Image (cartoon, rainbow, N blue to C red; front, side, top):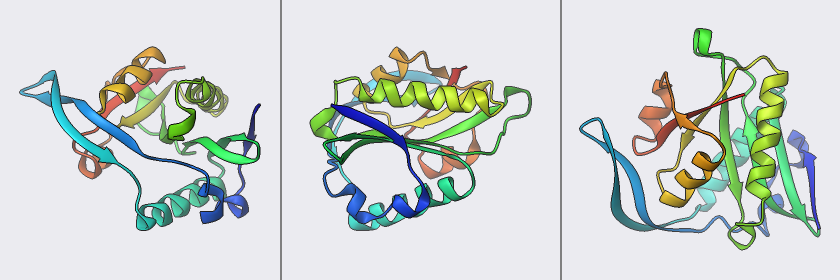
Length: 176
């Protein structure tokens, strides 16, 4: 059985991720070339280093400490998915809140956890004044298919910080 709960800063540490498998085997990606989206072969394995975990933990703690949303899925007490939404609105009339992360452990993908986490993020964002979620999304085809299934479309306004940090990401939005 999967259980869900809000996470507080004090609960977010390296031990929390001990049963979480980030690994993603990527074969094709969605990339923008000459203002046109294409599907491109770009095989690689995406996984997190210890330094990546340190950065993630710091970011999630900051989100929790600043009254953002950090929500997690557990199976038998082991973290199997999480989502985070930053608390500050941006984008003027677009009224975006940033979905800063959503990940499901490799061993639990395809079981509805991502959908449940995404819906919770949308609900939280709407309750906190947003009109849309903003997503800087991994370009892997499987990731893009998930966001499309969740109703996401190309962002009307790009967050330049995200574009600079992850130039291959797809900038998306989801109306609430």
